[in-house]
Image (cartoon, rainbow, N blue to C red; front, side, top):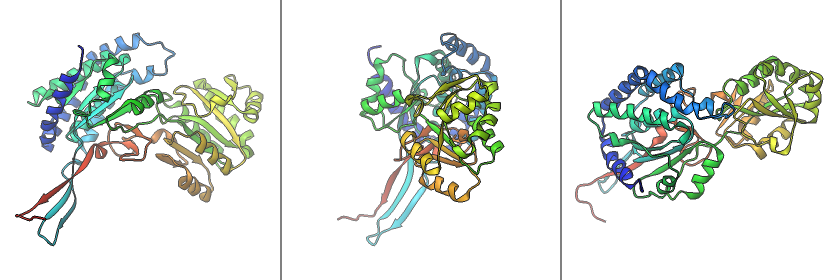
Length: 415
């Protein structure tokens, strides 16, 4: 294949059919797809294993790549969660009749054709296809070569369901993994309305710098948790351990712990009780290093300048001790990717100050950053977590897959 233009043209035409689907039709398709994922679990796992076998165990992407029975069930359940949501299209946002008799309405409509570029995350294939379809959009998927076999079988299942329901299978298309086609997709202003990159900072930067199609970034997460001096030690330890270890390969996992010097000697030895079973490698500043060395923590390194502002995506994190909330806020301002940030504190004034001053898509008091997720926020599945401020910020879910349209009804008016 020398060009993907024929694919893009087919998707663009299919977008017309996608926006004409009724809510009932969309619900039937997603219900059928949820069932098909379960009935095809063995086939999906078999194809997924082909991808897993090509990836080194040390690669932090491997956990994201993995699909097993539990994760396939979660994908199926996420489709049922989407079905509980209102159809985001056709909502009347304003309705006015002017003095000249013109009736002017503003309504929500599908964006059109959504292009998504992502890496070793086959769950994105299902989440994006389902969300875009439910919002009346067509979608062009460009998954990474690491997940090629898995993505192919998932789109094959999607096409079977679309065909079963007498709908155009070109509403959902998967592009070849050859990198030469990425540039063509990024320049397809005639066929694609928006591009969403989901993956590493390197991928996001490449798309932003090279796309002629408007983009929405679903950014990398460099997430901090600040343990303030009034924090309950056990509560803080529980929150930090969860944020780091529960699923370290995802963007809302913890990367840097900021701990008040007043409680560092008490907090850090408690923290490592939770870190040790997971062999979390800690890059510690001088004060934290001394405390952890005396506690005989085996997975300890000295911090370097590169340790901060790093998205680890593995069982690694950095620790910085700070004098007060001012120093913590300044560190976050300097190193945050504006994804998810948290404070653990029993000082209500400090908590409110943190919520108000930290510039991030999601800001927490006394909770793990692992909750930054469309499902956890009651939005169903998500496209990703947007770290920019235009159109969408935070979990980029169903309601943000629409735009606005003005409908003007007249009876002969001229200007």
